[in-house]
Amino acid sequence: MFDIIRYTPDKADIWNRFVAEAKNGTFLFDRNYMDYHSDRFNDHSLMFYEKNRLLAVLPGHISGDGYFTHKGLTYGGLLMSLQLSVVQTIELFKQLNDYLRSIGIKRVYYKCIPWIYHRFPAEEDLYALYHVCKARMVARDYSTNIFLRAGLRWERVRRRGVVRAQKAGLTVRRSDHYADFWKVLSDNLGNKYGIKPVHSLQEIELLRSRFPENIILYEAVKDGQVIAGVVLYLSSQVVHAQYSSATPEGKSLGAIDLIYEQIMLHDYVNYPYFDFGRSTENPDGSGLNESLAFQKEGFGGRGLCYDIYEYDL
Picture (tube, rainbow, N blue to C red):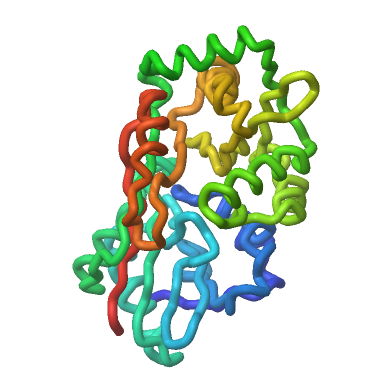
């Protein structure tokens, strides 16, 4: 039997220590990251104890009569101790569902953690979702990834981009100053899609100050001007491109290609995976942006799905 405890801010240190050691945890689940937008969500995260041992935590929030894991994060779901067995996970979901029914929840929306982010295999939750919860997939997003240790297989068009950028005198640097790149990013997203970055400049600067080893900005510069950039999120297994954008001049000169050449061939060659992120335009993963997917495949990337499940209580 599990003791299910609702997370409260006084438990932040316990929560964060568990996330750091969980077999499928990343810094996105640290409360110093999660809580930057706590005003937007009715947090109802849970902690699962057995005989006073914390074996799992579940980042989540409530909206109406639904429980979500978690709309404010790229991926979500149950974070598990290495000691949590599949039998225990099955029992955990049974008790979780009883608990959620008792507080008036009618349905659960479960966002999975993609396997490349696991330090150890961690899909016991998927087994329980199917066999205990009778969950159905309601969204499948498409991401492009590279297994870096297998070596890079760049298409000719990407290699030509690097040469073009080098001939134009572009340089790549790491930077702690986000304002110039955020203007490039905001202008590009606004002009092309009519949207804004998920994070405001103030939010990304706040998060970077809290996680300086995990959030890294690379810029491509020409004549002292930032014409492209990539913001990386680093976890133990994955180098993830959270943001990537260039000015029209940067695009024509291959600036993004030059940045990725620095990242993949020099600075992060010892990481297992590089995740370019989603290439879709709708919340359910439909509307594949074919040109964006093609660009990422040109670096040698291939497909990985981010899945969301739903089930009724």
